[in-house]
Length: 382
Image (cartoon, rainbow, N blue to C red; front, top):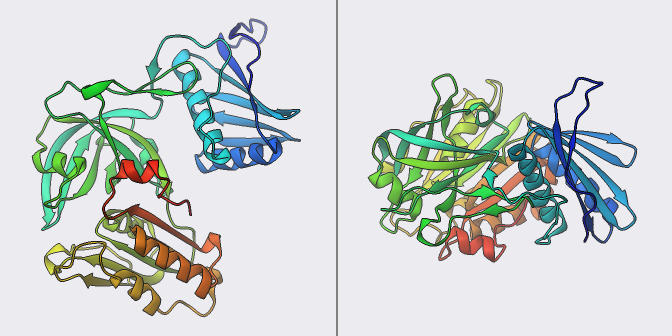
């Protein structure tokens, strides 16, 4: 791995363009062509406009652009933006995405890196407006925030919330000149957790998040239980995939997936047909779900059994009657890790669904925190 050229200010007086900052990195990888194409595809998933120019790739970000090309055994990345924060944001996106597709924790050195730390490009601060108990086990927190439009799409359901440590002054992550996130140290470091945006009103500048609350409360549930107007959290995102266009849908999940499924249902066309399977503990955990006229909702009750200890959801998926013609069918499921494995295996092996016909993910694993899941790479990619 090596880097070439120092950061430069590109003053294009003749064309009338404003001063821009740029930086370059060269990353040695086996099969660089394969990794460059995988990087381009992931950029498209992240709503970055990608243009292919022969073997070269151009990426148009909201806050700048990047040119990607092959040079021998290396991928060369040139990032350009109008300011340092935007430039570091592009480096962050490219460094993280290339690390993901190469399955390596890459330490990329960008040319001319500046010692100054800048804000995360997809970070915003949310302030609690109100809280409501919407079922025995679900609490809704409504937040206010700025620049929420990018979270309104149904293509990206999730985000990360940064919960300040109780009793400490909120401190937020920053980005360094190599596109790496720099976290506050020690007790000031916030706890990160993934959540679904249940609803959003861009005009009012508000969004709602539903938290599962239970006796063995994690950081999110603890926050929801004690949240009051004026409390703040950080938010990074969006991310996470939704359903593909289809004629018939099977949506399945436990209470952790209920907010995502409810939001998906609100976006489906009136003509959509399908079945929704929702696993909760008991009837008091059910909610009113808005659906189209051709969608059936079935609630599955554990009747006191601990979450993650039954085969209730996987059995219900197996019992569901998928259309004989799978070509216009899509299955979306999210649940505990063991159920995730069983459901995904059934859909692929028994039903023969292709990867473009289903998305099954593990939202949690019994006995492990989200941090432990990610460290062990237990959250399996679809």
